[in-house]
Amino acid sequence: MASIFTKIINGEIPCYKIAEDENYFAFLDINPLQKGHTLVVPKLEVDRYFDLEENTLAGLTVFSKRVAKAIKLAFPCDRIGMTVIGLEVPHAHIHLIPINRLLDMDFRQPKLALTKVEMQDIAQKIQLHFE
Image (cartoon, rainbow, N blue to C red):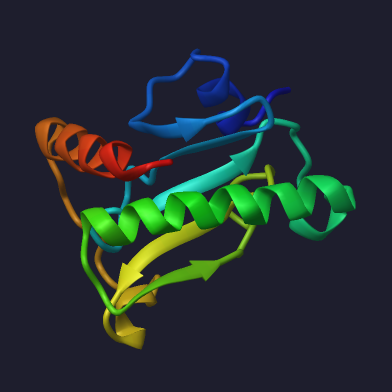
C-alpha cells in the first residue's frame, strides 16, 4: 500500500506544495513546528533514509538545499534546521525548519495551528524564492 507521501505526490491527497522535479517533492508539514516547516521526499518510495540508493540520497540533499535557501529567504532566521526522524511515515523524508534557537526544532513542542489561508501564504512565500 502506498504511503501517505506517495499519495500526496500522486495528487490523491492535497498538500501545500513548495516545489518538485522529476525525482523529488517538497511540501509544507501540516503540523509545523515553525512557519515554513517543510518536508522534502524522494518520489521513489523507500522507507528508510539510509536505504536510499546513493544517487537518490545525494540528489535529495541537493534538492533540499534549494528548498532550504527559499525557506530562509521567505522566513529570515539564523539557520534552516534539518532532521531525519523517519518513524512517523514509512517514506524517507527530511524536515527543514527555520530556526533561531535549538528549542525551535524540539518536536515535543506544541505544533502551530495555522489556517488554510496562512498555509497557502507560507507556501507562496517560499515558492517565490525557489530556484
